[in-house]
Every structure is written in structure tokens, then in C-alpha cells.
Image 1 (cartoon, rainbow, N blue to C red):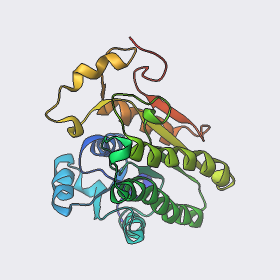
Image 2 (image 1 turned 45 degrees about the vertical axis):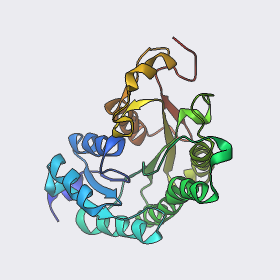
Image 3 (image 1 turned 30 degrees about the horizontal axis):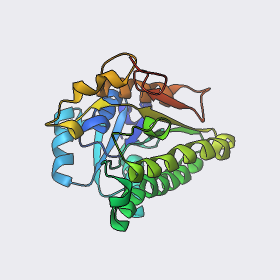
Length: 249
């Protein structure tokens, strides 16, 4: 085990082969942390890791977070490569708009499985490891401001209800795990420029926020790092939305 492995913090970042998750991994690496990346496509995940550099401080675990074996592999990899776990960022998930009456049972199950079940099961496995270490830790979930302020022109009940479960899980676990020194918080992004919006004029949506622009992935990453390291903050949902919930420009 290297000196870096024994002194640096280690973060597990799910859904980190692109978009917000990839930038969160980049931010942790820039801060000197070890990072275990995760994504469902092994090829895309390896490509993302290569692009980040720092192979001595990165590791990859491919698999869906809704499969308990993926969480187990994340924990095992972190312990074997870096000697411990300090932070879990539950970023993996799916999101797509669709009118309420057109959502199929299969689609609803997909959002509940990918967003809520994946976060729940991965967190269970990591919390067991954090308790075994006995030094606390930090969990940061990724939600959405649409839980607090829906848009009539963007019908997305299925993904939003699954993300609302993640918001509720954050509050519940913050209370349950406080005695273990494990803090649980959530970042609630507004409209962020990511590959999800590729091919669309995402900047045209800037007027939905008081700051009259869309957000950048680095702004979400900054919020995640803040919550990961803020030792007197737990149970908090931090909006990174340019004022989307507060008002309109």
C-alpha cells in the first residue's frame, strides 16, 4: 500500500463515467483524494478513468448500483486498493420526462430501481463498512430541485417520485446514523449543462432561474465537496439551482 493510500481520503462515486459524476470524481482527485469510479458500461468507465489520469489514485467497478454485488465490489475495491472509505457519493441514476398517464409500469420500475433502490442498497453496504472502520464518514446523495418545484411543461412524475425517495432517505439516515459519526446530506441540482442535454438548446432554459443561466457540472461538484468535508452539517439538502426554487428571473 502506498503512502498516498494511507493518508488520502477515499471517495466512492457512483455513476461517474460521464456528466456530473465524472466531474465529481475529477474534483475529488484534484483535492488529493483516492477515487473509486462506477458505471454500468466497463468500456466507458475505463475511458473515463484514463481521461482523469492519476491511475495510482483511481480504481473502477463496473455494474448497476441496484445489484448488491456492485456495492460489495465498491467496498472491497476501496479497502483493497486504498485501505478504507471516507465518502460515498450516490450519483448514479436515470431521468427522462414523460406525461403521467403515458408512463408504463416497466418505466416506473426502472426509475425506482435505478434511482432509489440503487442508492438504498449501495448505501447499506457502505454504511456497514464505515461502521466496521469506526471513524465515521460522509454520504452525499444527488437529488433534484423538481422535488420542491415542479414544472408544468416538463412532466416527469416517475423520475421525480424516485428522487423524492432519495431526499427522504437522506433525512432519515442523517438521524439514524449520527451516533456512528456518519453524516448524510444531499445536493439538489437545477438545470445543469451535461450530456443529458446534448443536441438541445439548454441555455434557453436559463430563464427558469433567478441567475438567468443554467448551471455547470463544476458547480455541483463544488457543492458535493463542501458537504463531504463539512463536519457539522448533516441532514441538509443543498440546492445548486441558480434560484430555480426561490423565484424567476
